[in-house]
Image (cartoon, rainbow, N blue to C red; front, side, top):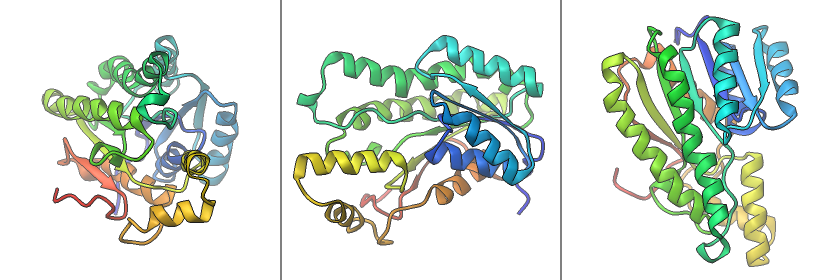
Length: 262
């Protein structure tokens, strides 16, 4: 299938590793012009690796999406480099693991800045350019924790629900601008972030890593964790003109782990 992404401009935030990196790589494979940003110094190396693999230029920018000034700088650099913006993927690192009693107010405020306000600011600054595109699309990356809370993740369980509310509202408000807005709710996918969460579980339970991984996969009908590449395939399709009538969807990519009826 031709996803019609050749020469489209896609910005993927928090893309030095994990789901963001895999998504940026897949955009480049499909012929898009890609911009990635991250707080990590790995972002330049990631861009170079994707360029080497795909032959497409990738712009790398060191930036912190919890900082409004950095977001404005990233959007401006994207437009200056490639002349516009067609696709925005809002991604950010997850907040710390822990229970309600573990979290003080500064941790709540930091998580809100990182996971909610980063998406708000990114959309605000990107909208003038997305409105000029013939294939404007926004994808927020949230979590299946918005369907059923995940143990020891009170911050993520709470704040990502607000991102879902933002996403669904934008899908209604921006439809007249021909901008589609969707979200992917990834389940347990083997990334560096999942390594952190598993280690946090081990610290509380005293179990082995193998036992914690087994406890997770026992609740996944497919019997395994997902891969970043499997997530990226879905993400890039949803953002592409090939999915031009898909709007306002909160799509689970979780191997069927959500036991709900919707």
